[in-house]
Length: 292
Ligand code: GDP
Ligand code: ZN
Image (tube, rainbow, N blue to C red; front, side, top):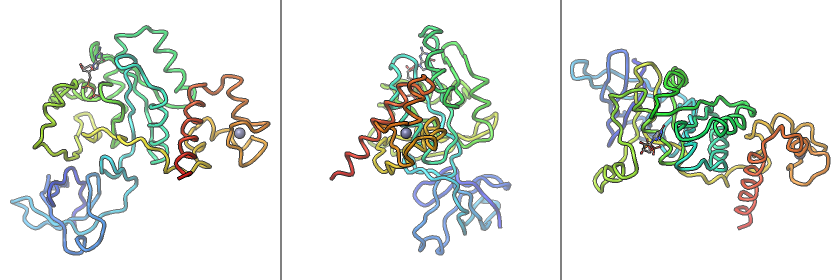
C-alpha cells in the first residue's frame, strides 16, 4: 500500500501525490459507505491500480491533525494572516478574530503586514509591537518593493499554510512575489471577472518551489465566533491565557471583577487596549447569540 497526500478533488476524482508521482484516484466502496469522504490535505493509503496510467484507489484516510470547513481542507498547520497597513486600513478587531479562530483550530499563527511601501516606519512599528508583545511572529512585506520576500519563503517552508485576511490585503500578490510562475490574479476587478458564472471554485494545494504547501483559497471567510464557549474565549488570547490563573475569581471573565489580572495588565499597558476591546466585543457577541 502506498501513502499519499491529496492535492485536489473534483467530482470524485482525487489528485494524490505519492512517491510514484501524482496519481488520479477514486475511493473504494468501503470509504463510500462511511460518512467521511476524503478532502484536500488528507494523508491516505492507496492501492496502485495501474502504474502506467497513474491510477489508484483510496482505501483509507489517515487521522486528520486539523480540519477547516471553509475552505474544506485538512492538516493545515499554519495560518498566515495578511493585513494591509493601508488601503484598506487594518481592521484590528477583524485581525484579532482571525487570530482567535486560528488558535481555536489549533494552527500556528504568523501575522503579515503588507503594503509597507505606503506607510511610515512609525506606523509599522506600532502595529508590529502590538502583536510581537503577545508572542506572535510578525513579518512586514511590500510586494512593490519586494520587501520581506525571503522571510515569507522561510515562514512557509515545512508547513501547510492557509492564507487569511481581507480581500485587497495582497494575498495573491504575495504568492506571486515568492513564486512568479503561479500568475495568480490580483486586484478586485480582475478577480471578479474570473469568478464568472461557470467557474466553480475547487480548493487546491499549491506546492511551493522552496518548500511547503499553500491552500489556494483564502481561509476564515466566515468569522462568526458565536460557536466558541464564552468561558474558553480567554484561552485563545495568549496574553489573557498567560495570566488568568492570577485573577481573584477562577471564573473571572475579566470585565468588572475585582483583582483581575487581565485588567491589571491593561492598566500597565502590558496588554494592548485594542486586543482587550476585541475580547470584550467577541464575548458580547457570543453572549448575545446564546440569548435566542
Ligand atoms: P488579495 O485580495 O488579498 O489577494 O489582494 P491582491 O493580491 O489582489 O492585491 C490587492 C491590490 O493591492 C492589488 O491592486 C495589488 O496590486 C495591491 N498590492 C498588493 N500588495 C501591495 C504592496 O505591497 N504595496 C502596494 N502599494 N500595493 C499592493
Ligand atoms: Zn480576570
